[in-house]
Length: 478
Image 1: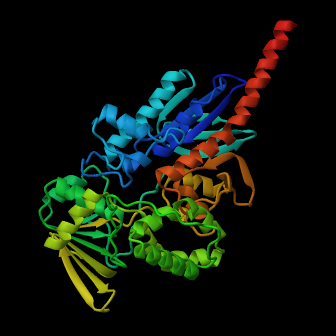
Image 2: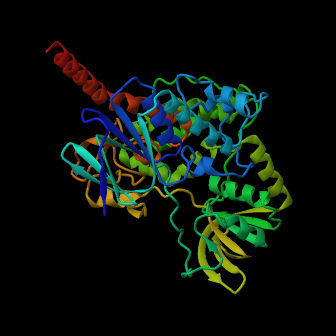
Image 3: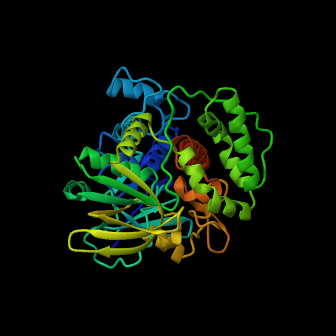
């Protein structure tokens, strides 16, 4: 039987945040730090701790941040906040250019919210549960949790993070599969890797590198095969790379033009003795603007032809991880394959995978102990199994963006419903806004969204505070 939970003060404002990874946790802290006495922040997270998510929930010491410490502050107005915290809580010798463990960063994000709670007691509540559905009731929003509890709020923010991957097309694969792992972050994955002799990672992005690193950390000694359509691994950061300032007054309006433009900038930078990485990093402040300037058909063209090349250059590996991968590639411990899987056949103790080689067009075969799904996050919300997303789409409170990269939102992150109406109470932040922003998964971009959204959400609470104060004063003078 469902039971309702109303906000504490009848004249107060309740903001519910669904998702307690980096985005939801940092947004909660940001809201609490603003002086709004009538505000109650409710954070809903199904995992037993907040601040982690998939990225920072890992306990593998080999999983490092792919951004240096100096750029990872959770607080935009305190750019050295994480660096100073790491020196106080991890190692006093941490340098700005160091790439630190992701698990440490999860501890840091949790500490940011705990400090905000300490300074503003009584304005925060945490629900360790899953949000299953949302219902609009007049001016309020009701959130149904898995345990039957109903949270009543004025504003709701979807900080859902990256969705789990969908299953790649593997012709011949049936259910159940003894030698296939859909969720590489499942608790039993390390034990299964330890027992394997040879593994195949389907997908060659950051997830596959994470699995390769974790496999070696758990003493996996066999060969790691990595297969994807293009066979491209993420590039690595280069120590000592300096930024090249690029005067951006205008930019091409087509994908072909952008590609030619970036190549020209890279050649010019190389002639000056600079690295291509400085060009990619210098474009970062303009990436969202460039994306939004492209027409729909040009965005589709980018996704179809350029996306995999952009991804491996933009989202790079920590230098230490890049060196490990390079060493294993050189020794044959890691082998890269480019092509499309045409057949999957399980035997008693192995899997026979056939793929068509991208360059030669010939069929090739791999015999492995395990096949792991490393295709990365699912972005098409029509295929997402999350019960909350399914509920939103079914009720037409939300709809996919035109590119099917996330949810359709306004410029400020408000959900646009199935009738094209902009919501005044439901918002999305982070990866679900990929279709409108493109770059929306890294800390600096999300940090900006948090700052903008917190300013948007709080005026309603401030107005309620002013009304409450006036009411009290009237009572006193009366």
